[in-house]
Every structure is written in structure tokens, then in C-alpha cells.
Length: 235
Ligand code: SF4
Image (cartoon, rainbow, N blue to C red; front, side):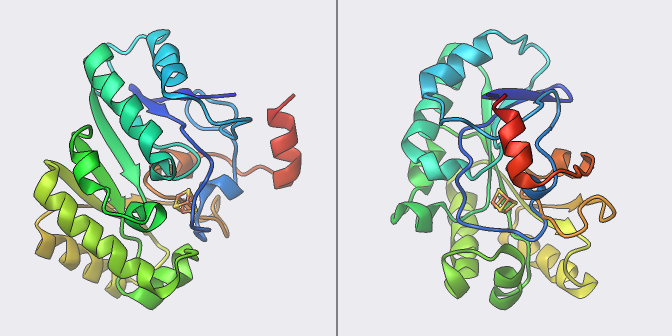
């Protein structure tokens, strides 16, 4: 099972496959492979110690930061995310980035941003839409129509407590006018804005997030079923 994988020069941590969303563009519906990983479906969730041990086997010299991302939403494992991120900084001397769908407060039932601020240098938050209905249509969040406001609140708080905040959308899945509105929202927050580009010929009916987004969008389309693919991962 793949706990750590490299994409380009950067190393990513695959902490969990859990996620409260079923985004229409999620790359998990399309491919198991990403970067140098053949399969990102986990047999079990790794401990923070296993994450660090795995990272210690890699040449991290060209990886400017370690990114918590993977095939799921990292804040689903908040305590382990925080523990692993702190070890990355203290033991490995690396900066930490979190790629998240921004629903961590709903997932954990409390305000998690102060905790994240203590161990995350940069955070990339998937906005994905310009209003609550559009967001729900795109992400199919299990938290329902209130999810969008939760993401906006999360962005606002991160802006106050974390230095590097980026808001992102996946280009081509919402109308251009909505994309413009998303850029305006990021502008009002005073944070960076990024459009992640999806190859729709590949992602015909799937979706990505920043945690598992941009690099994944460039992967090929697998013809096998999801269950077949999961089974083969465990071979
Ligand atoms: S794109 Fe990210 S947030 Fe959306 S379903 Fe996939 S893992 Fe979850």
C-alpha cells in the first residue's frame, strides 16, 4: 500500500481514503495511479510514525514541502494529521502543506483551524463553486446545503491564522461566470486563487480536489471497474 508518493519533485502523504464528498470530478473514480504510486487505495490507514518512517526512506532534498493530500480528505484524521505534520517539521525539517476540501470543521464538529495553524505552513482549499447550490451539485457533500458556507468560513479563518492560503476550483466544471465569481470571492478574502485544469476527455464524469486534484487529473482513464481496480491494488 502506498503511504507516500512523489509527483514531480514533491512528496505527498496519502493519509486516508475517507471523504465526506463525492465530487463529480473526483479522480478516484478514474485512476488508482498518481505520480510514482501505482495504487492509492489504502488497505488500512497508516500511523503517523509509519508516515515518517516512509518519508525517511525517500530523498526529500528536492521536495520543498511535504503535502498532505492523497485519495481522501486528510482532516478526516485530524489528530493523526497534526501528529504527522508536526513530526515532518520537527524530525525532517520540512515545511507542510495541507490540501483540503475545507470541510474539516464539519467533519470534526469543532473549529480545527487553530490546531492546523500550529503545524501547517500553507493550505490549499477547494472552493469548487460560486454558491451553495452549485457547490452541492458539484461535490455531493454529505453535509448538505450548509457545506458551502462552512468552506467560506474555513477560508476566512485560515486567512487569519495561516500564512499561505490558496483557494482553488477545477476549471471546466462550472460556468465561466461562476469561475469568475470564485476568483472574486478569493479576491475579497485576499488569498491566492488557482484554477486546476482537468482533461475532460479523461475525466468524463469524474472529479478532483486539491488534496487529490491537479496531478491526478493528468492520469489516464482506466477501463476496469472500481471494484476490479481496488482488488488489483491488494494483489
Ligand atoms: S475530489 Fe477530493 S473532496 Fe472531492 S470526493 Fe474526491 S477526495 Fe473527496
